[in-house]
Structure formats: structure tokens, C-alpha cells
Length: 179
Length: 265
Image (cartoon, rainbow over all chains, first blue to last red; front, side):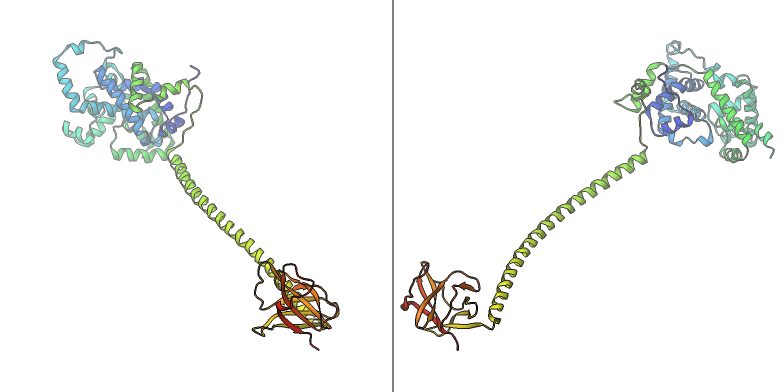
């Protein structure tokens, strides 16, 4: 594949902001699988994961102007878009309705996913299982449910300060398992 | 604040994963500009996450990319086309640059229309001026001729040897019909018509010098603007004009005498 371009990250970002389709193709080729992995750690259903992935790239294409390199690497921003897209999809009523509907017809779930992932073992979802319950819970609510510190405090009855302290401690633990 | 403690506080992980609240984010963004080691620690965790995501990547079916590009740009598939384009670099203009170019083109078109109209107007003006100039040249030539004639007349009159003889009517009126300037020294005869009607088509006026009672032909009077130079006359006591057949006669038809004047002195 010697005909393939390689871009420096700043070059790639510049071209994406200029809506360069070739650069976008490159971005897809390089990051689709990684972002799909993140989405699959949120969404168990293959079709919904694919929908979320497409939606994620549409958002990337449309919102790339908002990416600020001084606030993080490109992949960090891409991951945030993927995570937000997945959370939005989980939250949408549409998704919940079809989910309920699917639970009635079990055959749908028996169709094996072609990529054959098991959501519970992927990425942070897999890593978080190694944590003790109080840490696991706060990461579950913050990262996977996308709740704010205030929401978590309201949900768990903990003071916001405790939520913050516990979340940071949980993340320090989690990082050991990411490695 | 001890920066090492801050780095180890879990804030980096919280920030990079998007779990920090706005206040925490603002603090960290201020701090990372001041502490290179904090910045390095942030980048380090970002790279760790990217590596982990790559390790946990889930391959995507090939058709998804095509579907996605159709969705983003209906009717074209830029990535597929771009792949076959190989190393050819596609030059793209940024939006502001394209907008600036469009403005320039519009301005240029506008200016060209204006300039074209201006050129047309100047062409018209130039043509008018050229016509006016040729008219003035003609007028100038006419005036020059006139001036030369007047100058000639002045020379004729101012010569001390020149006699000015008024030829007056002899029938119904005694008004001056013509003036003869005769130079006794060089014998030249000039005539200026004053009040003679235009002759009939087949006739011409003829001037006669009366030398001792005998009329001597002094020439027929043609179409001359101011002074007609006629035949030289050696001697004369008077001048007379008769109407003769075109081309003149050797002897005057006395019944056709129109005007006459005596040489003074």
C-alpha cells in the first residue's frame, strides 16, 4: 500500500477543517476500528453500534471545526465524540423502544455478531470490572451513563465533593488496568 | 499547589476521559500552560488511551465506509476516488479564500463593464474631436486663402502707382458696379465686382480699356472670389464693362454697356 498517504496530525486536522474528503477517508481508515471498539463498549447490539459509528463520523465531519488541538490530541476528541454519540443513542427513546421490542423476540439476540465482540470485555468496560464496587459504580455513572457530578450526587445521595474525590480515586485505579 | 501531587490526583484521567466538571477543566487548562510536566503527563495518558483503544479495536465491515460517504456527500464517493488518485495532491481552497476570490471576480467583472463603457465613450469623443479638427483645418485653409487675397488686395491698393477706378452704372442707376485697380507701372489690371448681377448662362462680362477713344480688350471676367486679374493694359483713359457671349468678343457690343469709369487725372 505504498500509494497511501500518511499525514502528520496537524496536517490531517487542517485538511479536515477544510473538509478534505481524502483526509476524511484516511481518518476513517485509521480510526474507525478503534472508535468502533469504544462504541461497542457502550452498545451491545451490532446494528445499533454500526448506526452509532456512522453517526459518530457524521458528527466528526460536521463538527471538526470545534476541535481545539490545545485541549487535547485528535484521538482524544474523536473518542469523546464516539462516547457522546453512544450515550445519546442509549438515552434516546427510540433506542429504548426498539430495545424493549427486541427483548420480546429473543431470536434477534441469538444472531451472532459478525465481529463477535463481547461488550463486557472491551476497553474500559472490561477494565472497570476489576475495580471494587464503589469505584466501579461511580465510573459506570460518570463515564458510561454520562452523568454530571451533580446528577451522580443526586442519584447516590453522596455529597458532590465525595463524588469528585471518589471518581478521581476510581480513575487512578482504573488506569492500572488500562495499561 | 504541588504540581506532582496535582498530576497524581486523578484530575488528568478525569479531564481526558471527559469526566471533569467545567471548573476542573478550566483549572487544568490554565495549569497545563504553566507546567510543562503537567502537559506531558496529559499527553502521556492520551497516548495510553489511544493505544488501548487500538488494542480493543473492533473491525468495521468494509461497506460501512461507502455507506457513510454516500450519506455525507450524496452522488459522489470522494474517498474511493481519492484512493485511486494515488499521490496526486488535490488542491483545495479554504472558504475565506474562495469567498475573497469570488468578491475579486465580481469586482473585476464590474470594473471591466465600467472600463468598457468608458472606452466606448472615449472612442465616441475622439471621433467627434477628429471631425471637429478636420472642420477647423478646412476653415483655417479657407481663412488663410481669404487672408492672402485680402493681403493681395491691400498690396494692390497701397501701391502708389495703382489707380482705383469705380465703374458705375449708366442706365437705370449710377451705383458702383465694379472697381478696377490698374497699376500704371507694372500694367496689371485687377477687378472687383461690386454690384453686377450674375450673367446669363451663355454670356460673360468683358472689360475694355478705352485708349484714345478705342476700346481695347482687357479680358473676360470669370468666377473670381475677390480680385480678378485681367489682361495687362499699357495705357487707358477709361474702363468699361459690356455683356458679351461666353468667351468674349474682339470688339465690344456697345448696346450691352453695363458700367464705365474714367481713370482719374
